[in-house]
Image (cartoon, rainbow, N blue to C red):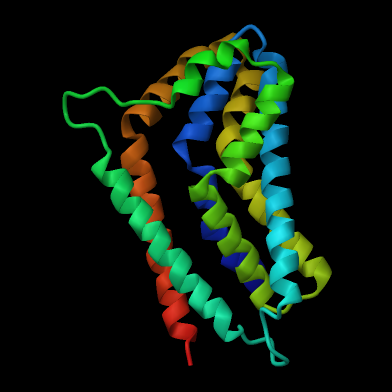
Length: 225
């Protein structure tokens, strides 16, 4: 189980540090419905990661991600190469889209309507950002495949996936925790976090994606016959 857990650690951190989902939950917490929508958002986030990870894990296991000696199947190495290259390409795109020195960072248009969200929309948004967003989906696929290739038991796979989901939830979960622990005193802290992540969104994602992408490329090349 140790190798499976170790394999998902950097991928879980990569999911956790995605700026847009963190900005979204901070904006929700600043609305009158923040006390309801914030937890709903985090529940949706956990649900999205867990369901997507379980589906990919089941598919990977069913097609044989490891051989009789618990070595990765050749297709797993190829998939890692493809995922790694895709992440590096996304990193380059993020870097090119970063705001210039005097430009204001652009955020998705849907963020302007967050104050009208109810719990259902908060859950739906979190599911979309955690499991459907291309950047996160690539990381989920990489994590589930990495777990399956180790050949650990079903229980070990479940634990490793749970570790990945917990790590991936730290990003939106920590602002929610600060909101409940600090109360009104969290307003300035969360607003500062929102402004910093808005300004540096593209740079943060570019660095994360290129580091994880190169790691996957290296792992894929190392395991090729």
